[in-house]
Image 1 (cartoon, helix red, strand yellow):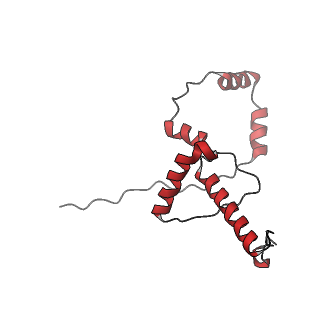
Image 2 (spheres, one colour):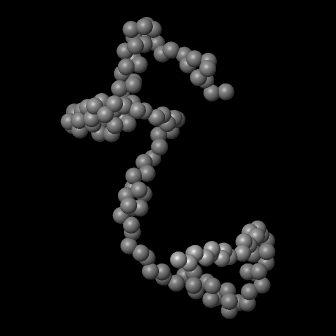
Image 3 (cartoon, one colour):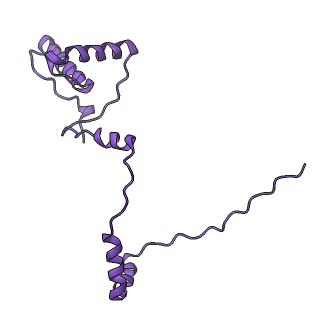
Length: 134
């Protein structure tokens, strides 16, 4: 059995730094005919590919972010997650809450109000010093 020869790799080229001034000077030195050809190529209609369904879905799903929000990571037991999904699905016509994020925000708001009422005369607690942004 003959050994497999090692492949030859192409030589490594040094990266050329982009110089916008050189590019601008090069384009200004083109003849008017070359400029017209470039302009015609830019304005020529291009054949568009059919949109990828996954890409289109991703573009539609980019929701507008609420101002003043901060992301958190939340892990839930599977049973609690299923319970939340079922609750959201069946109570949407009555509550108007159709997204899990809105459901979680409302649950946090209600529990905070309940605890503040029970333990702090209904007033919000100040943010502890170690949690304040500097």
